[in-house]
Length: 211
DNA sequence: TTATGGATTAGCT
DNA sequence: GCTAATCCATAAA
Figure 1 (spheres, rainbow, N blue to C red):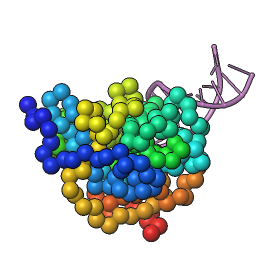
Figure 2 (tube, rainbow, N blue to C red):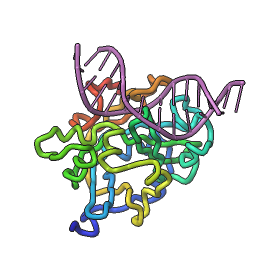
Figure 3 (cartoon, chains in turn blue, green, purple):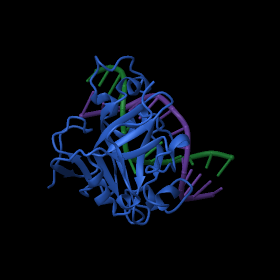
């Protein structure tokens, strides 16, 4: 049985998420995603994010307006927007300031609960595998953390009573690289993807740095 | 009621 | 590098 709390983690406040998506995306690098399961805690450091600017961003889901699907993005900051894509995958976003603005969490560095994540991913033993396959990519990290729309959409990521939340542990992020967003067809050239420079858990291949 | 396409991944060649 | 798998929300009718 794991301890009932994770040492060294401190909650973020609402103001952290009450800023523009570009700012929140950058600030989220180095923070920790925490999942409380029945038996243990899963934690992973955020190493890659993308900003979606809201209604006026043609690549954002919020561009369709405030619908049943996207209503969380238009709600209070710091809540989880989970959507299902390509018939197979869930992706985790955080609502933030702006009209429908949000940040997509694209990759994590696994910290605690690695064996549990591996089981969620359908991998029997994590030790012998490449750890990057656990949480490197938005669909992969959602599967590793057991994130689904039914369970987690609309969840408050700040509240300690939530089974899914984002916290800080004092880690200081190093240099940050900014690149175009990945996998989108509209506004694909905008420099709105943020990664920790040189981190091996970042998804995708070679970086196309802009600045 | 039906048709369409997508903020991905894994498994081939 | 290329493509199938796979399903939900939307939009059109």
